[in-house]
Length: 128
Image (tube, rainbow, N blue to C red):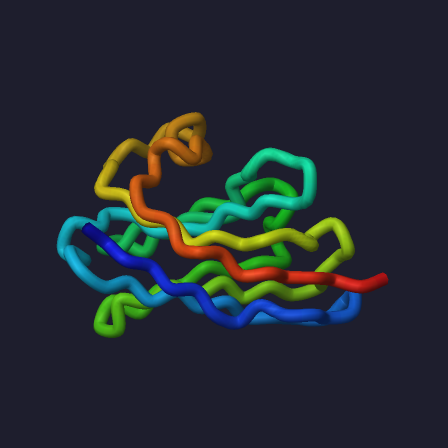
């Protein structure tokens, strides 16, 4: 099994920045891709970004392209999400995810069921 622990959430004003971190432990050798989903109140979980552990290839939801950057440090088994130009609609619980799936289709990568490992979530609140 893979355990994921997020950190870095908090309260920020619109236009501000936050950096989320996610540390993986356990069977980390089985991880092919890591990423982030988010869930706003009364909404379904939505894909935010993902990164392939070996190649560093990145994928983003249209809503965050140009504002968010996902990166990884394989030596630390950690993935980061740098969030800039935050908007009130970015307010959500952010979940770190990991999968051994090598599928690259958009439909698969943005499907929560593709990711078998989930962190506990960290709250991000953006005030207007």
